[in-house]
Amino acid sequence: MASIKHFQVTFDCAEPERVARFWAEVLGYTAPPPPEGFATWDDFDRALPAGYRGPAFASCADPSGVGPRLFFQRVPEGKVVKNRVHLDVRVGTGLVGEERVAALEAECARLVALGAVRVRLLRADGVNESCLVMQDVEGNEFCLD
Image (cartoon, rainbow, N blue to C red):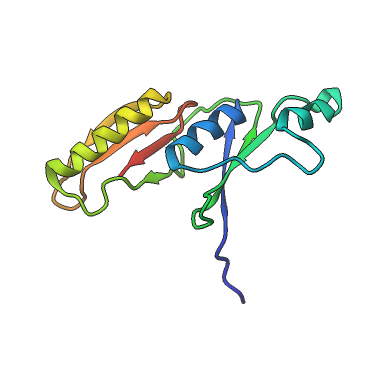
């Protein structure tokens, strides 16, 4: 049996474009070009039947092709409980102690300016290094690690 090496991470959300733009900025990802025959995604959207207009989905991808594609789909229900899966944004790799915390806090400040929410700093405990728990623009938890 062949092993799967490529995957995408899918987010259920209320505003796919907004959440996609946020994560693209966080990770340095880019949006795909619009479908062939359309100059922009707005042009594509206007060509859809009336009941299907409005961004029902969006995506972004690692321009280097290394990281997974992120896909954002509109769903009618809002977020109710804590995520069962979350992303760890690796900004402190190889750093320890206060140097690591400083890197986490600097990235946190950048992401808060984009609309993220700082939840709490989890300090190193002898087993795990420090990480910072955050929420994206729709309240999905993620960690700066």
